[in-house]
Amino acid sequence: MPQSLRTPSSSNLVRDLNLASPFSQAPVDILFTIFLAYIEELKGSPPLICEKHSTISISQVCRQWRDLSLGMATLWSVVDVDIPPNPTPSTISALEKMIDAFIFRSGECPLTIRVRAYADDGLGASPAALELYALVEPTAKLLLAHCHRWKELEVTSASLWLGPDSPLHSICTLKPDRVPNLRGVMLNFYEEPETENYTAPCILQCPTLRRLELKGYSSDFYTKMVDCKSLTELIIGDPTEIPDPFVVWFHGLKFIEMALVVNVLRQCPNLVHCSLTLTSEDSTPENDDPIRIEGPISLPRLQSLALYGQWIPPGIASSFDLPQLTDLSMLPQTSTFSEENVIIEWVRKVGSQLTDFTFDYAAFPRAGLPLLLPYLPNVARLRVIRYGHERLVDDPPTDAPRASFDQAIWDGLTPRLGGVNEPDDGGVSEGGCWCPHLQVLHCVVSGTGRFREKRKFKAALAAFIVAMRTGTRGLARLQEIKLEFEGAFTSISTHELVHTLAEAGVGWKAFTLVTSFLNEQ
Image (tube, rainbow, N blue to C red; front, side, top):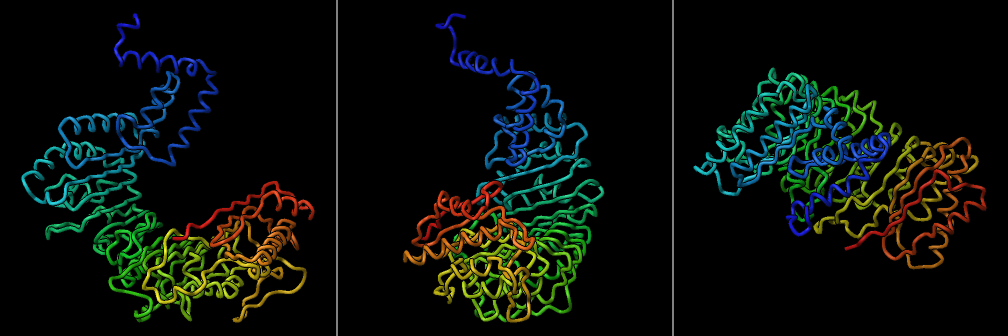
């Protein structure tokens, strides 16, 4: 075709074919390797169903990739359904065709269904809402026709979609025997239901359910419908997005009370992983009475526990029996400076069995570190991090130093020949240091403007790395350190540190040092 007669679309097609042609001529084994690498990347960033869907895109790169993608049924087993606020018939029709293609190409693989339905505020139960329901009804029926293959269900929706006339109502209220293979459910209703006819999702009573994630409003209502005995993973709240710190409620989870959480946990004897975002209305650490828990809460299989929220209530750690717990994260929104710090309370309870421990440096006093670290004799990964928020303005002890590392802490972590460190209550650290089995350390470094203090700090840090990398007395070899500097501090010179380690006969191989600065507001 002469260049002058080519339309813009045909010109683009010719250009794309010319670009893809050399790629399609590459050896098959190279194409296959690149394809598999791209598939691994997709797992970390789930695509959406649209014209630019990544799964569809890679199937159109070349003939070899199309054959590979069409031959991999699992590649098409994640069905994303995004319903915009004002969908048109053509939009819904295109969405249904794409859903149908994914379901067909997935063969008999278990399906992951992710539904996101949005709506304009104030639509309510108006005729426009009923018209919207009618438009989306065929899409819901298409999904329901294959509900026996559902493995995971995720629903993010406004309250508009919770009414009895909504197509999504039929999805959330499926009888358990209709979804015999369901293993995971995530519900995120970002508006509070306004109708008295709202029905709780009875799909939560499915006896095969293993993973439950509840976000948004009325989570307390959902928990009453759950068959908790079958759960191995429970997530209440969403700690991934940090809200405005001046907002009382946390992460869209409306006032989930600890008493309710305790009641749910009592019914989950098979939990292995648990993440809780705790908050309560008009509740603050300084004026709340300690929560009283009747009887012990036994979770014999729990291995990891993450506690987020407005604040973590004190006085409850002693009520938990967690014999298998090895991974604990404590990241409250509000600092917990007090005579009986809640972080120390938990570490005294389970610290000796932890191999992974994470807490927010802004929620713990620097003076408490020497009391805390000796109770972590087996920890391999210690993360004292900034969780990405500032403490609340009305938090009384804002002038207390945060849990940043200084020279004294490095000295306490450095192995020595002979001797042990003994905390006040009799806890003993092996190897003459705190955390002798440390392999990965993330921490915040206290800032100082004094040259002499900086020099002492660098010397203490180098001594710590040398001792831990040498493997003194059979101690584990340190693999990674991540330092975040607060205030005025000159960054550690990697070249200088390498030279210091080389002089001590310690290699840099298989060791990572990462440095960064905190952006103080």
